Length: 412
Image 1: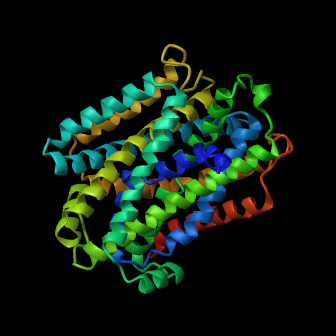
Image 2: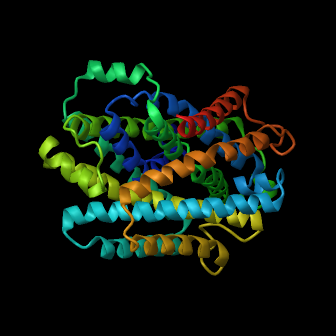
């Protein structure tokens, strides 16, 4: 048991960060609009997400560098500059949407204007990311993952008909029309997200630095025990992430969808709609969970773009260097979060912004997955420890599924 809990690290944090406010909004919309018809997605996305994140973890552990540095050895810099720009843009929009969703939910509990809350939340996140060191940040993020149990408790509190829930979870049904296909793209995009690819690999490097392996030569290669521990870590983290997705869809299907509230306009509306349908307890749990996971996800979003830019452009990087030791790296974190704060004042509908940020991620992810496959199968780059055949085929399946869902969204 000691080894089991000691293995928890980047995989658990990454899995929990996957259920950010964007993901919560997307799953809430899926449940409100389509009921339990997409519950089966959780059973499908868990093995796909686990294989993708484990492959990214393996790249970081074996090469001793982040994903951006590994991709730099396979693709020309102009192509990767475009990837960084796209990632920065998508993550900034996601941060803005996450902050808006958090502030909207906080306003429903406190009555404080959401614009004030956005500034306070955003400034606190920038300060903590710059001032705290990696070990402190990792510990805080691991504990914040516990807030996601709020969604499991909320769904169980509603007392669903578990036989019909099990049937919806195990029997897939094809999406109907462009809305159904678009929802599938959004679910895939918010579950198998580009920013998580970079974050997972970079955190493996941070973990090795924390263990005293400061030089690249010391970090290359990984032992069988290290790889086994990371499989456990990623497996638990991704299972937890998809379990939460399942229960969020179930919660809104049993409340909003069942009562004809199929088009919620804000996170606050979703939370407040739960009160008469499921009780004050369910509303508070939903709201607290959304705010807590936002504090977990936003540093991950800003950090992943900073790691990608630093690795591709050769900047000094790392959450242990401090601001003076990695100014460009921290500048990306600060600018991305600050822009997210500013975008909130444009009064964009938070739920729509959260949903469309998930759709954008769903369209970007399969192209990045192709690059990940090229890196992970390169024996020289991977120090003769390439990805396993099972992981290779599973990541390839995720790539094809995401391309297929995107095509279905535009054709039907």
